[in-house]
Image: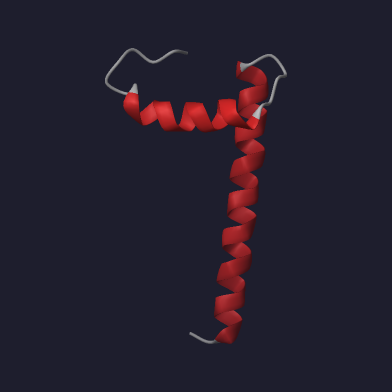
Amino acid sequence: YGPAMKVFMAVLIKAGTWAIMRYLKGLSKELFNGQVPEDIVEKYARSRSVSASLTPKL
């Protein structure tokens, strides 16, 4: 690999995280009727692993 590959990977990772955040925001808009507080997204992401054993709230 070279410096070009490092830059490419960094751009890829940035674009990936941006796309994921866009997707999560759209998802939370559908789930929470247009309210997009960041803490709801964080709580959902954190409690998803915890409540995986419990019944999923979908």
